[in-house]
Image (cartoon, rainbow, N blue to C red; front, top):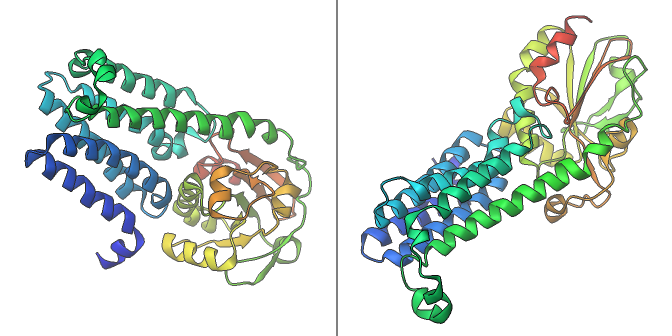
Length: 349
């Protein structure tokens, strides 16, 4: 428990806030309780993006659980025969978290309509809720100070949550799809050609030279991630760890390349219990050499790192023992995030 508290301090703080909101509601402070529950869902979402990387199942349970409880209490308060607000909160949260949960199966860029359909269903459920349909909007406009003290006004915090989920869906669609997708077709490396050499330090500072260490000795599976700040990339790291033994049994060296310093990679390797080496690409020169590079900084990355040059694009490359590229997998396809599909190619080596 102590280890969990150290690793997820904000998560446990928000659990306490959510319990406080429920307690306020049942203690008779209905408006304050509903406001806190709605706003806390926003906070839970923000924390989930930063802390979900080290324990996804825990964060999924907390995010979906908080949205379910908030919506359920609102439905019970307004006497709904159908769980309108419960559905709304779950669908809204789902629009932001669904790709995290099923990333390995969906990929990063495929089926991007799912998020918007989920958000639309949540909004439809919210708008059709009797408590919303019976809201006196003229009263809200004419006497806002009094109206904001009513339980119905507390639904504004729920609506704000839905709006933020929509903005997040648009941001992810724009950055992951509109901006990034054109660059996946520009990589200079090709299947059947020799893989470019590189020298990068691993998490212990030991220099890895692709040609010196592996050419003529064993096949290599390289995969690029965007960095520690990226929740999707942690899912990718876990997916390759689950498949690590299958690659290892076939004599394939697995190497992950990212822009995180050695100390960060050491912590990440320990926290995620990874068995493969994490290589530090400080100036993104290797990502650029292989063509898996977006020369546009990500606002989320800039907030927590110094990646002003751009960010790597998630991808995987299978190199045979002679240094020839046998397979290229990209995030505009599903298989870069689902390493088991790469095993089919491995059998041909």
